Amino acid sequence: MAFSECLFDYDAEVCAYVVRKIGRGIEVARELNAHTCLIRTGSLNPAGSYNPCKENLLPESKERLIETLKQVAAKAEAEGVTMVIETHALTIMGSPETNKEIIAAVGSDRMGVVMDYVNHFQSMHQVYNSTERLNHIFDYMGPISSVAHCKDIRVKPGLVLHIDEEIPGEGELDMVTALQRWHDLYPDGYMLLEHLGSDHYPHAAANVQHICAETGIEIH
Image (cartoon, rainbow, N blue to C red; front, top):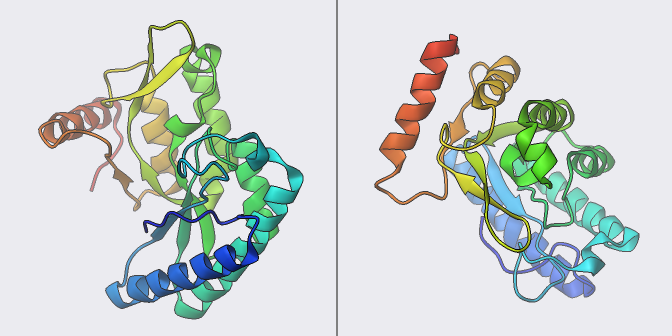
């Protein structure tokens, strides 16, 4: 679900407005019998939801976010819709530990996160030791996820650190671990490819199917 507002805006009226907007989206998700309804947290940076801002990391920002998510969760419970939050290293929900903490504080079975593991690599060490990092991410976020994004990661050259997405199977990640951990958690679940040009999706899907076939991970 797309919206420009921040769920933990300083202005309570903005938060109330976006809760109403999400509420209507939840109603549509229920009418469509959607498996999940995806939302984002937003950012106090006016440039947009995935733009960093140091005020995002203040304790009071987290408190406002939790209160807003509780209202969203109440509507989701009433409509029987499962919500998932797109989390990212540049956002207020920037780490697996924070994600687990916030979802626990909301306290609803209808509120979880997207298993977008690539979004939680924060250093070259983590990328080049991806099995360890993937297991850490899945340990914290796996139980609170109900849908996943499937992609790989690459470190690109530059004068500062650049970590970017890559076609599954063509980057640095231990894709076998990522796919196996998801399958172990949700054997009847699914993963979504994203952020590719339309001509790259068949190749990306074929890569994933090949990895699964070689390692005995069932796709059905």
